[in-house]
Image (tube, rainbow, N blue to C red; front, side, top):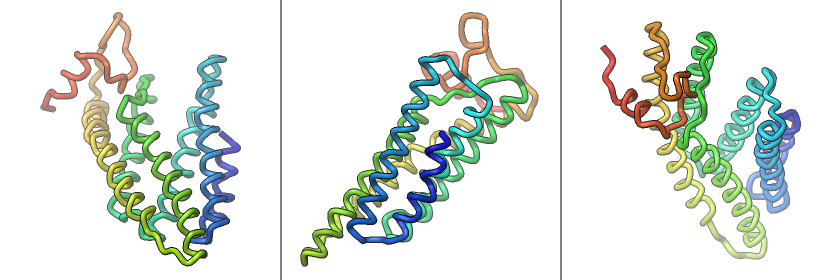
Length: 212
């Protein structure tokens, strides 16, 4: 996690040279390495059962710093719409707020399938774009002009926003319930199940209920 945070300024240094073959390739490699550390620390935490307060705080912070930085530099290269960035940031702030509210009530809001899909899609979008820009920049230096990476990056960014939008509605429902002081529902086994597991029919039915 600390390595991922430390790689953010390194990525910024590389990405601050847009459309330069070597720098764009370096940015892609740095982001890929940082993404691998994200999967690695999650795997080790589950395998060794090492869940710490520091990890709960720093791991999502590192992810948000890295992906938001990458999307900001994509926006400067006309490959990401400001609307997409606003949707992504709104989703991140909303989910973070919900988790803080749930923590006050000693509850856990787990990442559901949409959250995991969004994370993987974000990383793939950024990696594909920066590797693509590096290749096209090299081709441009050879006298060949190609803009496919910008088109693909723009389309993938909108796809990320589409995946993030349902989580905003999900966060809104949970937030209103927590602010109303209502207890978290029990979904299975007589114990409060992690919210966001997404596989329980009673949880899905609850989320469809209107608030009164």
